[in-house]
Structure formats: structure tokens, C-alpha cells
Length: 462
Image (cartoon, rainbow, N blue to C red; front, side, top):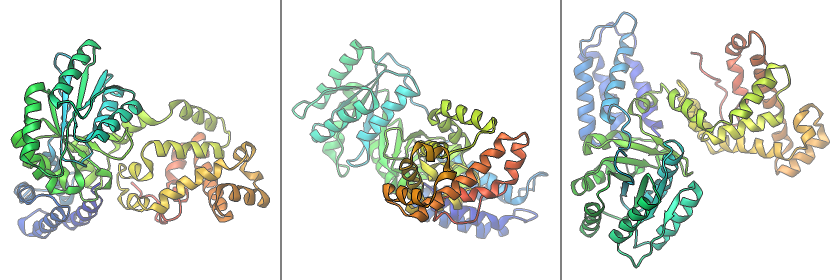
């Protein structure tokens, strides 16, 4: 997400670097470029006008702070205004009510409502420790009911059965009664969608909302529709008292216009981002972190939080002890590192959260790079345990056997062994007394860890 906008803005903002003072004249061209970058990202025109106006008003005439260059001052202003546009701070769900707290999901057909219900159910169960019940009131699509039932099993929450011959209000009231009896904390309600906003749909969902009185009414919208997402949310907000927005499919949206438009146009906060197809691919929306990511400054906090949840701490500690004792980093360990990275959303997801990694993140987005990492794991799986633990024994005949077993070539095997060897050298530096100092000097060598197609630029120096 934001790949195109990040590239344009970071390139544009360099033009004010080195100026002794920020004046209307020397930032005019920069503001024009910022305006074009936002419009190309499909940000709604009223949002672009308000944003550029606010940046100009704050930037013109500001003296350079003692420790900052004018360029840094300008970037700081842009960053702060981006945060304001998107909502200042993370808006959490308000579940402070007599259980069950009813959360209704609304939106157009195909926006990802049903999947988002499952993702939110998992989020609430795992991170908020809530007992969750889900129900489908989409009586027009029996497949949607079956889909939610399947997803509920996958995320390990209870599903309240419904059928196409029932009335939505009766379904939800039945689910509320069941949730009370079974002491569920939260009831998530999946509602029917349409291919477009229409009066019948709005009247039905308005009636359902009035009957069940949810504490949260979330509008689920496809981010790839750009500023149309904000306009549709605004139309729903006129009928329903929305409390927030879930932006879906943000992993496929390189523009980011919806994220920058929704809050300004609807006045409602974005509460979550859908960042992939898997049921754990839901992130709370933090405007400050997203603004930082847009400007190429990374999002280290989110990366740390994700690592805390998804990295196998037992394996990590075991590897750390092994390395500290001077034992080698074998191919089993290498495969574990690949799997850990995949658990965190893959190379692209991790890199885009690291400061200054925009270009590498774009390179990692290529199918060739992601496929290269998967290929490494397949090759290692085709080896014997002895070969994994002692890569030096892998001779020509063993390479031919491994290549045949993994559907790869001897060149692929050689590439893996070379990159593992470079990784092992890096890990060895961790284990020495002066490991961190050596690691800092050797950061450039990490480019060898990258699969083919990633380019040879190496990591930037900070």
C-alpha cells in the first residue's frame, strides 16, 4: 500500500533540502508536486485542497530549527498534516456495554464483509481475549452463510446458524439471546450487501440497525476503489450512524487514496486495515504509523508488535543460544528463518515497515523474489537431515538428487548454498563478543541473502 505515493512524495520532498528558509516561492513547486502525487494516488479533491492549504500555511516563513534542516522541517509538517487528515490516533472499538456488545458490519457486495467478520473475530479472541459469536444476516446469499460458518471454525469462534427463509431481524435477535445465555462478550453481525447503493438495501439495514442497536456499526469498503470508497462510505453514513471504517484489500492497493480520503469526507475513523487474504491479516489503523510509512520512514512499532505475536520465541531463543555457543547456522535454521518471515507476511510486508527500505520493498514485491524464498524452503525440504545439518557434504551427485526431488536446477541449489553461507557468516558475527560492531560493518553483505530479482544495491546506511 502507498508504494506509488511514497515514491513520489519522498522524491518531491528532497527538492526543499538545503534551503536557508522556507518561503512561498521555494516551496511552490514542491507543493505542486505534492498535490499531483495525492491526486494520482486517487485522493479526493477536497482532501487534497485542504491538505495542501494546511501544509502551505504552516510551512511558509518558518525559520530553520537549530537541529533541523528546512527540508526536515517541511517533511515534519507534511507528516503531521497527513496524521491529521487520517484521524490523529488509533480509534479502538467501543465495547463498553452490557454483554453481548453487538458489532454490525455494513457495505457493498464484494467489499470483503464476511472475511472481515472472521478476521475481526480472531483479532478480538486472540488480542482482546473476548468470547466471540458470529452470525450472518445475509439471507440473499446462502453461500455467504456457509462461508461464515467455515471461517468461524477456522478462527475458532462460535457460529450462530441462520437460513435464507428467515428474516434478518429475527436472526440477529436470536443470536443476541444465545449470546446472553452462553455469556459471549461480542456478537459480530454480517449483513447483506448489494452491487450498488440502493433504497431497498438502505431501508432494510436501517430497520435492522434500529432493532438490534449495535454499539459499533462498521462500514467495510474495498480500498482499491480509491476515492469512491470515501463517497460510498459517506452515502452509508447518511442512513446509518457509522462508528468506523474497515479498509479491505490494502495489500493490493498501491495508491492509498481511500485511506487519505475516508476520514475527511465521512468524519468517521478508519479502525482497521485488511492487509491480506489470511484470517490473521487485519491491523488496527494507526494514522501516525501510516503517515510515517507513506513518507518512507517505516513503521517499526508495527513490525515489533507483529514479531511479538508471530515469531516462535522458543525457536528464536534456541537459535540464539546455539549461535552464542559458536555452533554453526545450518540449513534447518535457514529454513526456519524463511518460515518465520512468511508468518509475518513475507519479505514485502516486513521491508515496507523498515525505514529507508522503499526501493528494496518494491523489488521484493516482484513475484520472482517471493518465489525465490519459497523455492529455498522446497529445496531444503528435499534434503536429508544429514545434508541440512552439514551443507558442506552436498556433492555434485547429491545436488542432482536434490534438484530432481525439488523440481529445481543445480544452479538453484548452488545459489541457495551460497546465500546460506553468507547468512551463516552474519550469524557468526552475532555470536562473537564484538558481534554488534561487526554486524554494523557487515550490513552490506546482507544483500547476498536476497533471492534473484532483488537487485544488488544492498541495504542503505543509516
